[in-house]
Image (cartoon, rainbow, N blue to C red; front, side, top):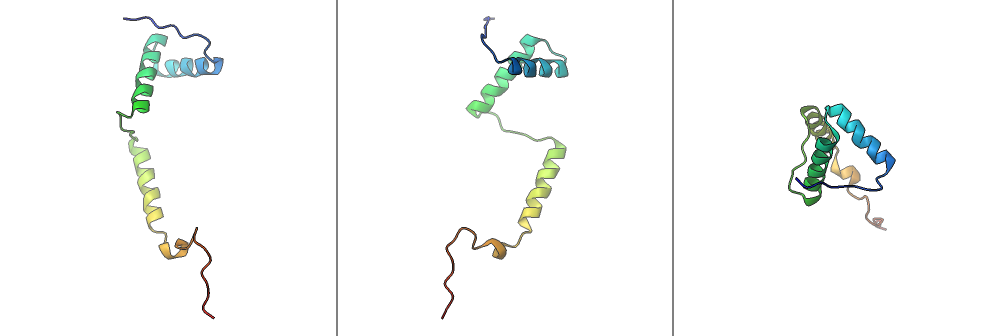
Length: 86
């Protein structure tokens, strides 16, 4: 396996990495490997974002609420003033 050395990392970033490692019960190498893999997948776009069941429900409820808003109230937003007949 290739060894990679990262220099001059921001101390706040190192704290976040260490905190994530602690929360997962992982060592530094495993954590960095995981974060690099996830970041690469997200950057390249080869992994679909997913939500957990609670987030799915909240998102579905929000979309449902938005779908109930009548369009006529907001139909003219962003359009020029409508000329009134004389």
